[in-house]
Amino acid sequence: MTVKNHSTGPAINPYLILVLGVVGVSTGSIFVRLAAAPALVTAAYRVGLASLILAPVALWKARQELSALSMRDFRLAMLSGLFLALHFATWISSLDYTAIANSVVLVDTIPLWVGLLTPMISKDRLSRTTIISIVISVIGGAIVGLGDFAVGGRALWGDFLAVVGAICAAFYLLLGRSLRRKLSLLSYVFVCYGAATIILWLVVIMLGYPIVGYSSKTMMAFWAMALVSQIMGHSSYNWALKWFSTGLVAVALLGEPVGSTILAYIIFGEGLTWSKFIGGVVILSAIYIAAAGEKSG
Image (tube, rainbow, N blue to C red; front, side, top):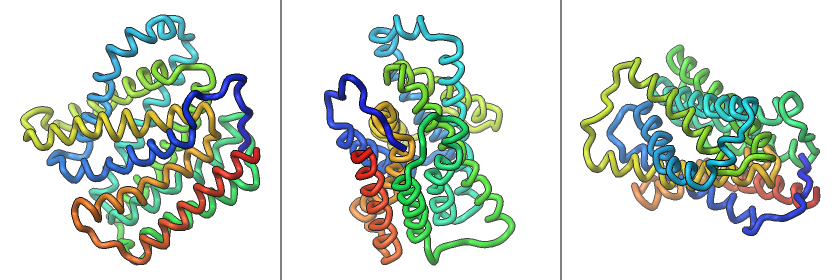
């Protein structure tokens, strides 16, 4: 996918923002581990608190743009939020049925789905370099989970949920790419995260999960997820969508398991297996290939 340069380039190197995004989202699994709450409640607090933080800033800085937003763009941003909510709901729920390795490998097929869906949704064209990087990144994700795959009927349902989560994430990125061409980051993420918040909290209430009564440690983890994983992590990706193709951003997303593995080793002392190391090198190689192709395009 080749992205044409805008008449005015970004004030900050977009590759640095992409790295910042990888670091931000890599903390997500760490904070989930520290939060003693149901997975869907954790997701609802993550986007809910992020929306709460963004609300006064968006209403102050982007009020004029938000009020002038066309109904079509507003609906597309809401739809993007729906797919973000579905991504969180299905992927996180998959962890209750299948092994973490199954879930990680299958949700890491996001670049593959982006490649398949791009011709139907976006005007971007798939270049040979992008296709190669997508294939390599999916292989790298499979190597990360090598030797730790679960099998069985219950696991198959979890695997299905993880695949649905990957497809939803692909739609979320592609819609974001389309909207970020004309909307500011603040306006887009405010509507998108807001829609995801409403949907996730409705699901939490419908399922009867407790909303309050969590420990201070869990609440601190919720706030950390909102600030670091969502606002710093996801918003960096959404910012980068204006300057990079969806393919590169999707491949860069696979830096998350690499960063999470390193953080888990530092914080929790979890061992680094050869499969995780080799898979991480393969994923980083795919990101480099995608980035090199973007520059040459």
